[in-house]
Length: 313
Ligand code: NAP
Image (cartoon, rainbow, N blue to C red; front, side, top):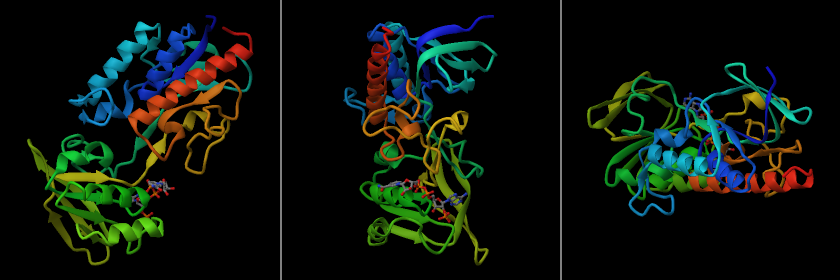
């Protein structure tokens, strides 16, 4: 069977992928998308999104992603609910094989595979996801006004999340497995100086507990003394880092030490001409739906211009 050819092949279906689809569709490029196993990406795991402009009353994450999808398909984006299992970016047109074995070729590829928040993998974490368990204080902190919450981690993310949460929460427990933070000095100092933050050193969370209303406690254990206890909280924020979804591109595309794709300057061009990256897969700093969407638009514009230079319109 011969491979199907596309001018623009988008991998991933979060805000960046769909926005790239809208722009590429409106540029008459007949874009095609492999949406992956979790269409809509990380936003399908959150509840209310209140910080995306245009939704003054807020919107549920999954519903917002359905609207992105509907808008993109209106402009001609073809969506396949499949994973890409192999890519060959060494020659043009690029080759992509999907998980059912179907082969495709593309003049330009936009990578919008996102990142996955890391969780500890303890009992209760997945069960209460979106019902007290979160990996994004910016997204969900607002819902914990005057409540007690817990943040896990000792890096910059944990400091940032804990400090941000003090705007709403009554008390923030910051649980770290060692007796010193790895976070930058300035961010540690800010967290340590905040009266609402209580650091629980040398400790790990062992279980997230709750009931039909959501989280109501987290079991923790002190690694030095062995002491186990429960802390009453309604929010549990895991801030132990994200993993960019880039295993498919190892060895082919430039990445930083953690695996985030590197783009050139303020553009979305990767080190391979015709391959563009947008959203969380290439951004460890902002990680917001709105910034990912903006980068998706930029990737489609970069792709359109680059294709024009190649005489492909
Ligand atoms: P990180 O620097 O890798 O820190 C992860 C933290 O989670 C560490 O303290 C680590 O503990 C802890 N951890 C990891 N696995 C764990 C486990 N299984 N159980 C318990 N604790 C665990 O990740 P990050 O904080 O997300 O930061 C990622 C990058 O983004 C960094 O380069 C950071 O500087 C940057 N960043 C910058 C800003 C900013 O400048 N505004 C904000 C956020 C992130 P150990 O220390 O014991 O290893």
